[in-house]
Length: 214
Image (cartoon, rainbow, N blue to C red):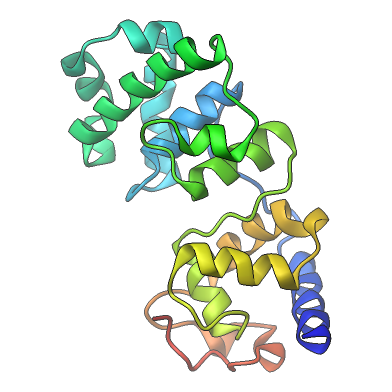
């Protein structure tokens, strides 16, 4: 395990050099807006979410306004993000829960976050890392795919993948690691076929880029 962890960290360091500007691409001003944007990002691009939230946050900028909104109003504002009915329902309920349980402040604890409507471990870790600088391992589709291709996990279960990655990588690297793997997944290590022929790190890849994600 120690050798595997060392190799994983070395590869991460090389990826850091390749993507020194990797960061959360969602646009937000506070933890609540990041929570809303992350919920909307399910099955939707960050670019589209940012387009939608630019107007959404003008009309419903905080949990107080969101909690008082109607289902139809929220649906109309977020329609283009997909699954808009379910997302609208979750956003309204989530806002009500933030008000009733946390005095209008988005909690900074994983257990409290995942208890909110529309919030799973991935979303919770996004909030912890980016809003509160609390180490959290985000496992989205890109991280899941790359972790398998790199041989860092053999599981296709996000919770188990999170556990496997947390064992390999020190906590101080968890937040930035998510940004870096997402950047690499979008740029080169794509699904279903990675662009290995133009990847400058292909010789360092444990799977040589030929394995496909589960």
